[in-house]
Length: 431
Image (cartoon, rainbow, N blue to C red):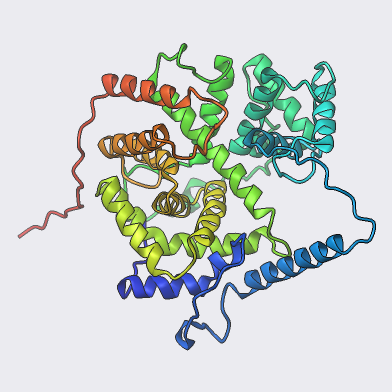
């Protein structure tokens, strides 16, 4: 994979990341910004200016609303605050995705969300009671959402409730819903005498492995999960390798949903504009991604932490940017963008994201396969969670870390870890 390298060390990284304006674009709280010198301007314009303007406008709007609300004569005591939960966020995200309109994804299960739950229950034939949303109903909704964003929607070309029904149908039958084949225009064959033989050209990449799409891989994993009747648990674990793949795709789905939640708070900015900023973000982190298969977690994290500190961008802004770009990277199958964002989140004090790096190194998506380094990333992430670090994937499941450890042990027993040496291509030269 062709990669653009940093020039000038940390100084150039600082200038580049400020030029893109990604952090300023996706910042959730106002914070002082480092000033860029005249050399950071390209064609007289800063790439991230549009995003910074959008955030400023949003902050002004919020301040104006706050002033109006506090100056109202007929003041009313605020209603009791509804708790914000990750369970609420994922429920709202999935309900909105399938067209049940739960409203803004804020993690608060209020009247609008309960109404959306009731519409979902009615569509599925469940007992209708928005306050009784049991685990089975929730799990089915989460599995359907994961399947849809991991290729189900692209495969069926359906949206909303029809897409949900397609998932239910393939769960019931064990078969995926396929589109009818598109009609093709027949081409009349030419006479053999008129076809000139193609010149035989050398192919330096003949026999090389093709790039595999993580989205397609996760689609296949989720279909197998559906066929199996649900996710592997600690009690049903028989194949550690598949269980880890399943948890990889589940974590990927959570990362996409979390990033979309952060992105929803940015107004007056299209998804394509955000994606453009994230593309530049991933490009500048590509050299650090290249080091994942060569060095251990401590060394790679320390280097990334140094780059983050030298950038002059507030850590909160970088973290918000990374969550969005992690989501965009996975959604677009851009592994440099996704891996660079996950690595930066680890460097900024979110060690739970190290699980993703372990998955990538184990399966070879966006990096070379290094099962030995994958094990180190898994251990680093899970040990940090055991020590009290914030859980970011499936926080409502207290047994997930035990499942990951058991799957690692099972996978290691079946496939002993061997350190892979990096190899370089060589050419035989004749005398």
